[in-house]
Length: 387
Image 1 (cartoon, rainbow, N blue to C red):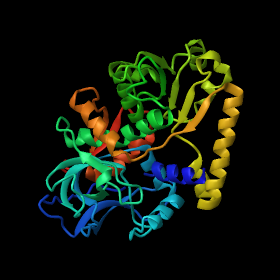
Image 2 (spheres, one colour):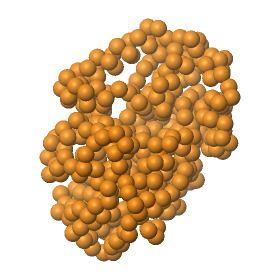
Image 3 (cartoon, rainbow, N blue to C red):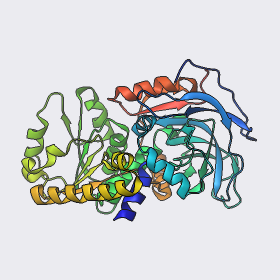
Image 4 (cartoon, one colour):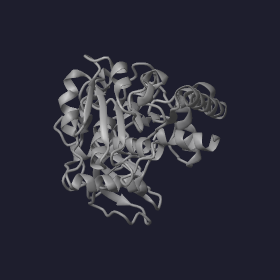
């Protein structure tokens, strides 16, 4: 179990005045670049724009990408305060990374152009347009250039521009891990299954609705009043407006859900024994488990032990009290799932949903919008926009 806790923990990790941004050719990479850097952790901590080295010396399976757009995810805001920092430091050592503890460059997904590749990175070529998700122990995508392993990227769908493409990869792989890996849903078995997605208007919820509907599932989701029309357009069969409805009463009156994805956290109470038949024998997956908080507090070794104990205690309690299969879900790199997403996009089965777009020089404003919450899709940073 400890090995599983460590592996899944590794998967989850996976500002100031606007300044002028230099632009470089994709034909060759410079030795320096501009990046938004964290030099310490703390409350209300904002990255600063700085000049740093470009990682031009690549391992055989690595690819250097000129970033054209990157999106923000809740993990970015949490990491500015030090969330997951203990595990991050351990992962750098485990992967024999030469990166120092600081600066930390955030940004968990990107779209861009390949400018250089290692000898064994044969899946892409220089000049290819790609999208992907950097491993957490690497520098992230809030920089003009990003070094990734070839398993961390795929060819960008031709139907999408870089802004649209940057909005999808991380949330898709998070959703895939939760509903498919933890929830057990597949393209073959999802038809007519009843799926509840808490928070359908966010990034994970948006793409979860679309993929589950493509697979023939019946999707119920919750959101606030101003997002009801959005989630209906994405395909949701039933929508619970938590601003105007009694959520617990509504859930209790519904037929049983096969899988429940809680993408916002803290919603378990709606699905416990008080919900009755609607949740008996359901699989409940939360994307906000306490594991990284525990590891940050207790260190890697003791924190892993405490996390395992916390998970088993919670899972046993829910099984005995409510007959719910309780699970934790995380982002996990998955090149197969990323290629599958490309096929859905190409067939117009999945469309990106954008909350807002900011130029690279306005990343602090993008983070401010992220911290406001109640997003309607993803926030994207456009590296090609004028400063």
